[in-house]
Amino acid sequence: MNKIKFIALLLLAALVTTSCEDKLDDNVNPDKAHSIDAKVGLPVLVFYSSQVVYDHSEYYAYFSQMFTTAAKSSVGTYSYKSEWEMLTMNRHPMWRRHFYDIGKNAVNLVANSQAINSPNYELIARTIKLMSTQLTTDAFGDMPLSQAYQSNAPSYDTQASIYAWMLHEADELIKMYETPEIAQCSTNQELTFKEDRIYGGDLEKWKGLVYAVKARLLLRNIPNVDVSHATCQKIYDAADAAIKQWRKGDLMYGDWFGNEPRYNYSGGTGEQNAVWSIAQPKINSWESRDNKLGDAIPSKFFMVDLMGLHDPESEIKCGLGDSRMLYANDPRVALLMTARTGPQTASNPASQDKMRFLENNIGMGTSFKVANYPDLYMGAYAGSTSGYNPLFTMEELYFIKAEALYWMNNKPEACRLAKEATEHNIERHLEAFFKNYPNENYKPDTDNKYPGVAKGNKVGFLQAQYWNADVNAFLNNEELLNAKGTSALVKKVTDRGNKHWFFNPAEYTLSDLMQQKYIAMYLQPEQWTDMRRYHYSNKRNNYGIGDAKEIVYPTLRRPYNLYAAYWIDGLTEDQKENTWIQRINYDPETEEKYNRAELQRLGAYKNYKWLQEPMIWSHKYGEVKSLTGE
Image: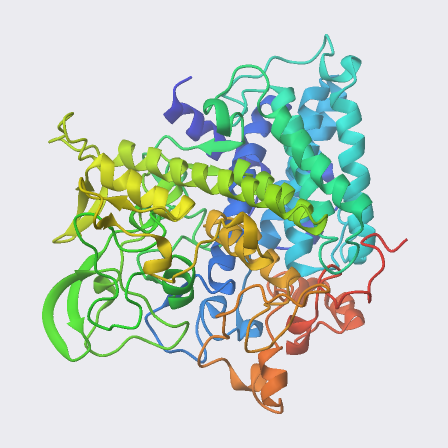
């Protein structure tokens, strides 16, 4: 079956297994939509596994202060992008995605799997449901689990009990994957990439995702619940097991990325297109949100403080590149976005190609248009309609190991792992650049095919020696000298941009680690979770982490023009700086209509303070003794 027919089958299956009714009581009877068999249901579930990762990431790119919009808003349609006035939004797509598109289909798939004695379907279905449960509880907190499909108004399980279930489910799934009578059952139906677009039914690869999710769950202990050596070792071991699992057998994506789970899109129409691509695919007009990267603007925090745009103190020079030194300390700037033409400054209309940015929710000046800011349809995820969306990345596993080692006081090894992950994160996006922007004038003698300075809104190219020198300066803080060795053609990081070398093993900090993880998690859900775990630690709220009271995101600040009634009124200046969004309110289109009593019991019904309530893993250190309530 070719790809177009596969997508048609997928969409047909989606129509069979879902309806336009948007409430949990549709899920009461799993037999209600039991008219499909497992082989038809699996591609639907695998498709939605990618979508639920996207749903969360699309919100979190703004919650984590990476992107902003051109408007200066105090109330808007998409409140997560600006002022955090969340209670009047009509829908949060990740809620429905988990409980209906994934949860209900997983229930049906497991039942069908058992009926035909083909446990391979059950293993994949439960793995996807586990990942989706983790994403959903880390966004909303308490939620239905034990009674999710048994009642019109299911009671909410506590987040502690959900964490207990997830950790138990991960261990049980690992045992099942390692039991030959289950994983290699003679009655398992054969699966191909027609049914499983990620792994073609290879259960050894799916087992790696269970280890990866387990590592992410255990990481929630740091830094607020349990930072003991024993717990950190468990975190390290789970991440290491996932890495080793994804580097077994035939490797789909090379020696380093191995078999990380990528949902690959073919490009075409509708859901055939990559979720972050310029096609902006959207599942139904009401069920989902298409990406708005065409309207998104990178933040000052992201561009200047983390990526290190050159000459940040100069309105004229900042955002410019040259023939050798790109735009910033971090070479990924030229991989994740393209500079565009616009006014040189707010007061000088002379046309100039620059990498521009905005403070979060401050609004752009009248001299500028959105089209003057960088084109974000670039990189491994957003660069092509036939790109991919990973469920989990190899870089994240390396950073999980590095974080565990840091808390075990092995900072040099933590630095090494973070550096290796960053080097390959550059490689990930560089591979996409070569694929999406081949240089037709490529000359082997100069190798001028690498990302360079954009000219006239077109992608520019750079010689290999200068690209490699920029990467080397960023990773190793070394200069490229001229032939006489008398001056630097490419300077050290300490001489430019944010003047900070993130990979100094002699002076490695928690801030170095987490800020580089933030960049590596570009368009991935862990960005916001990490910030919440570390209490948005910055120099304004002065929230120090650990015994050394380390500040993690020094220059981070709250967005401008926050909705005053929720985030400003009645708060002291100190309270304001420590009052950040911690969770998403429960989906108004389902929970407020059909399960209001549970929201009232929790104190979450139309209560803006619920948005400020920390997750079980983001209380102050010592307030929560166990993720599972034990």
